[in-house]
Length: 104
Image 1 (cartoon, rainbow, N blue to C red):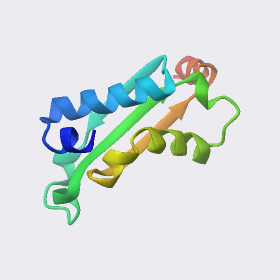
Image 2 (image 1 turned 60 degrees about the vertical axis):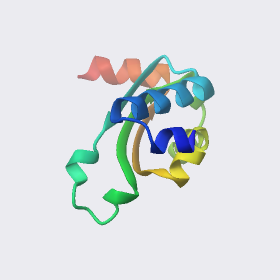
Image 3 (image 1 turned 90 degrees about the horizontal axis):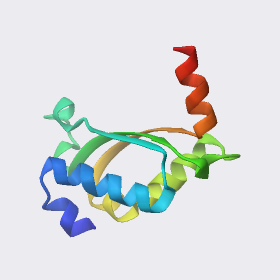
Image 4 (image 1 turned 90 degrees about the vertical axis):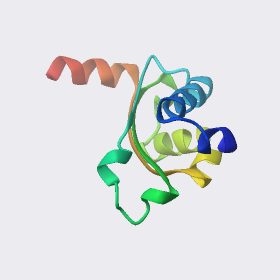
């Protein structure tokens, strides 16, 4: 994925992230946002993109926030080495997501 990711358009990069996370974690909901434009001129901006991932997956059941983030990072490991500079992660189980949507 790394070379394909590095040379991909912004929309294709999001699609690659979505495909990798879908294959690894079978989410019931997934949103990937490219925040790179907000970091233009930032020292790390040239090294790769900035993304926010909101993911809902049963794979997160019984796991701590750190363990959930590790699962996401593992799914994107090669892109994290070259192509993704920063990744913000919001990870829910389906039950947590249902509860949070009721509260809002």
